[in-house]
Image (cartoon, rainbow, N blue to C red; front, side):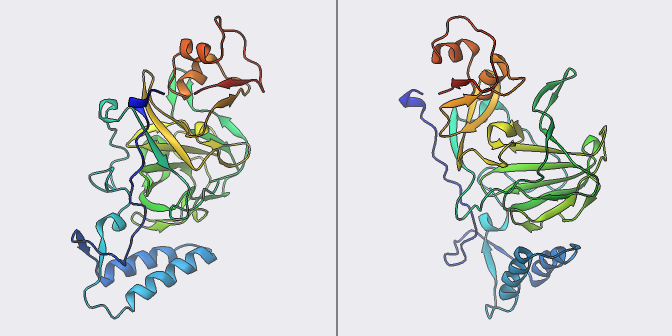
Amino acid sequence: MRADRAPLKDTTRLKINTSSISSNKIGVTKLQLVKLVDSLLDLSVIEEKEIELISYYNSILTSNQANLTIVKCGNFPATNFYDDFDESTVFQIIPDCEFPDSQIIKIESDSLGIYHHPKEGPVNSKFGWRDGKMHKGIDINLHKGDAIVAAFDGMVRIAHVKGAYGNVVIIRHYNGLETVYAHLSKIKVKPGQVVLAGQLIGLGGSTGRSSGPHLHFEVRFKGQALNPSSIISFTDNKTFNDSIVIKKSRYGICAYPSNATLHTIERGDTWYEVAKRYGLSMKELCVLNGIEKRYYLKPGQKLRVN
């Protein structure tokens, strides 16, 4: 990558910092905080993480501070990436031209939390073109009623029926990413609810446009769909790295691990798909690997991608 096009550093403010309240404040009423706590109590099973969160809110409610305020960036996640927290519009897609050439986004840290796989199981359908239409997520096989959990810490933006998605939960995370959990049989969270990675958000199903029970899982940034398989290993059920590069390319917006140097070929991979995943042309991918003419890719083969 050329020096003049080095990825921008992620300057996202990740979490609320109550010890240093800025002049940009939003008043929070006791009723609003009670509503957040009440949303947790709607869960059929309350785990230790939820109890800790309720305890945290309770400590705020019983505080002796007369005028409770929190920083705007702590109130709603990723306010430096989005103008508002729209609970009705599924996605507002930002045009490619408004993206920098590349930027680095942290996805796991002490403050962001650690990734938790939303549902373990075989992948039925990958990200990419399918039956003449763009499939913008990963389909994970499941049984109706299986638990679906949040992948990262964040705040629920949408939790209701939305067209082909059926029952869907969309969570906005503190780094600007959003994750989508579709075709649920039952939703267990509410809009505006703070959730932690690994927390129950719904039950698997086949609502909306679905041919059978599965979880349709998406990762988006500013409305643009990213290939989840470029960020997450659906074999090992973990992220490839704690940060990713989001890059603007001839194929659109793509993402890949910031430490990516080699790509391991999986069954069904093509030169075009691998090149697109890392924002390269097929010619650039061939040059990186010292190959003048593209040849058949074999599962397990490794390709240099940056």
